[in-house]
Length: 138
Image 1 (cartoon, rainbow, N blue to C red):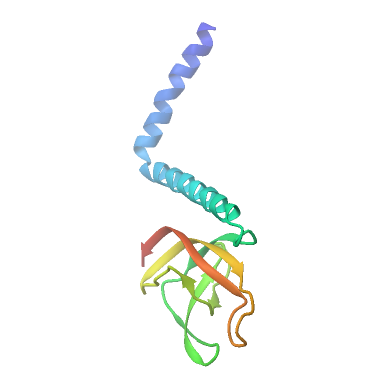
Image 2: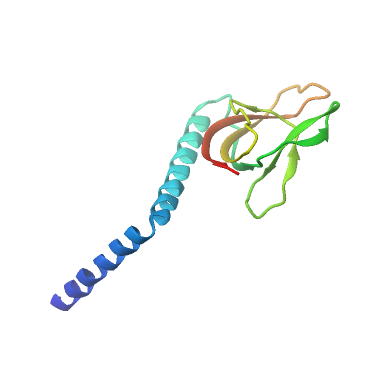
């Protein structure tokens, strides 16, 4: 028993020194915890609302610049991806509550719901910002 206490006692300073030497580890761990908490809270809020019970929660990455695209006509579109390993693709819709600012990479949490009777030239999905996880200047 004494031997086990000594082993554990000897390990604690190593962990503390690793945290002190690498504050990015703490930041990344806290960011991950915040993402999880926000996603779970958002999911709870959406599930408790009967009108939004069909909502889907996603984490999206938004690129730092707009691109030319054609929807109902020529315009500028955001570029999104679901993982940092995916390719960027044009995003033709709007995200309620999200204001894009050129020069920043975003990671956001959105809820996606089906639109009842969408207009002929409109999307069948509605996107709503739940949280901005990160905003990084490039």
